Length: 104
Image (cartoon, rainbow, N blue to C red):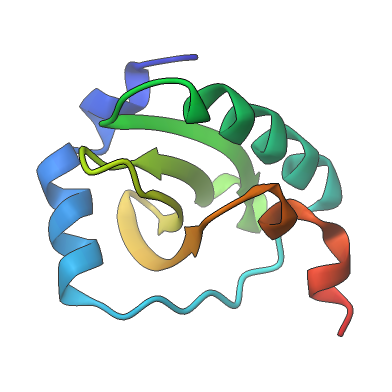
């Protein structure tokens, strides 16, 4: 995994964003990126947090989809638009990355 995102996205800022906002996620993540996210999530499960890794992009590169595993072990998908967190969702297992959740 690539630790560059820990320096780009300050861990304290991500924690503050999560604690200051309620989970809610409405972004459409491309299917290929969902597959990549699922793979990265599987790798993160075995490691201790904090960890942060980008798994996809959207909006012509302005939005990054990031997996963040906090110090407490909880994993989140965070949508970051031009270096500013916009929304997040709690990820408990690989089913979060299944494309059918976008076709209800």
